[in-house]
Image 1 (cartoon, helix red, strand yellow):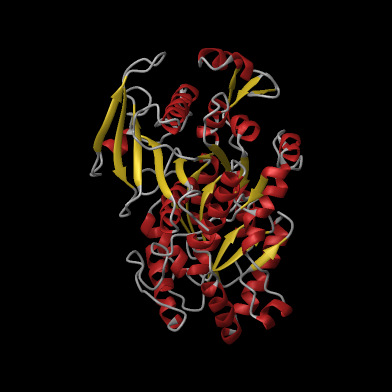
Image 2: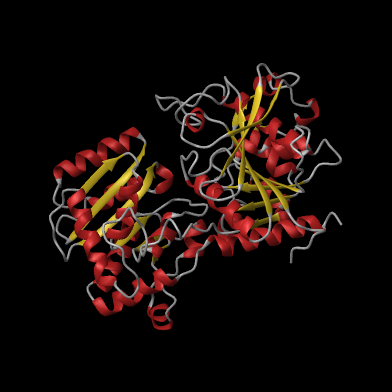
Length: 491
């Protein structure tokens, strides 16, 4: 329970937040969780780099302050804006050479990592730490700093050097991305010399940003209970499993939520036909629209498989490609929306040309197409080799598009396999396979198709998925409990 004495004042630090800037799931979390926290009574500020695309958008921005800081070339400018249509305040950190460039926050136009990312995000971390200590004279001081992924992971390390620092929570969204740089980069960043050790930021002779969060944060969490267990193993710990096991008493998992005002088939303006659990027949209109958008034959009884994904090996994209070779004699159609590894781009395009009656491919990302795939598909396939949380299985369930998933991370925590028992007790929400192989994926899709051919049973499963509650309120309540636990340890 929130009281005047323990009210969390949360500085939410992130490198992206929807709708301001988005490259992936972190933006969805950062765009929704702070709003849900505010609705629960938290006093929240989001802090984010002022990228060129944000500054040149139609966003209403107010200048807060301008500073010249020791050791920082050029001027730091802080702006204030709001997160979407909410009243949550966003502090935008402006710097001409570090953040004003347009395009992807992490990659250049050729898809290569910006060579100065270490300097850019180290600067961002230093500004976050100053804001957290109210050294920027913004007349607001948090009692919790919530950092997200490697781009903000130096903040706990910087704050640990100050006795009056607020508590720090560090959230791992994907341990595969660690912010690793040469030792020379550490020397150039002007960080405290004592941080260069195996008990600090050093990782096999490299500077590891993410260790700043894993070593120095008061609490660590990740985006599903299963993933919190998996990252303590050699298979998914990326060399950090020993450290994570050492800190397991302060490590936990909270599944992400979804913004059900945006992802809601009843009101979604981006889909052709709105529908609810009481009007499932209208979902078929969306399948027909999807077939038209992807220039697939208008077959009402086709079993439509959807996929919206980054086209990288982590997502099991190679398994999907191999699986698609087996569908020629089956009443299946497949729609893909995604971008990533250029070699996967070529393979999907080639496959669609060879089999245009069954396979539709769009390389890139388009919000309207993403929503239409969720509304128009019968199943959504996610054979990820690892998946910290996953959001598309949650979007799919909201739209009655049954997820077919590999039993890892957040997929294991959120999808209940359709067995005789779970169908009977009404808990089934999808199809789960336990090995990341083509035969296992094939078997799961076949199981789904067998039920699809039994309309009454299939509609029951579809309603189960649509009634599952993965709203941000549930997740935000768990974050609130975590904040309160951290603040109680101060009292």
